[in-house]
Length: 196
Image (cartoon, rainbow, N blue to C red; front, side):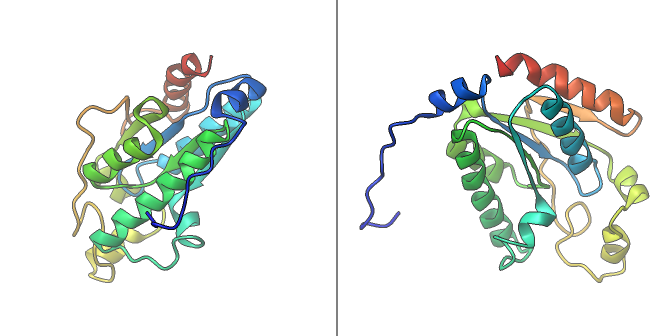
């Protein structure tokens, strides 16, 4: 933190914004391997929330890396900085009274713990999209696993870089043998109660 800055206190609070929106705001953090279905599920959950009149915004790994985080690599220290920046953005969105959905591999437990510190434990919901590496490779939507196996991609999570699964996520969705519709409904059932 810069020594030459002073935190500004605002007259309008998060609670004021939540009251205006008619619902609580929090961060839904979707974590899992590439190809696990994080972005797909976050997108579909957002559609359903939007249909219910819930103010939402989605943050997605590929999109963020094409903009604010385009200067970062996939080396461990840059992955940590990637997640820290996203957490700060998400914190602003949650403070604005918006239900924020974030779909990021976020492979390190310490980084996900840091997100909780930034946004506050009460505003953080960790959703672990638990899909086997075999299923993720079978899907290989972006062709990343094939490139990683050929040695064309370094630091590929699940292949040449670790993924530290959540120990005690708020919600775990095992997608290998579960339909997308069932997964979306499970997530919705879990979070709708938190909106009031």
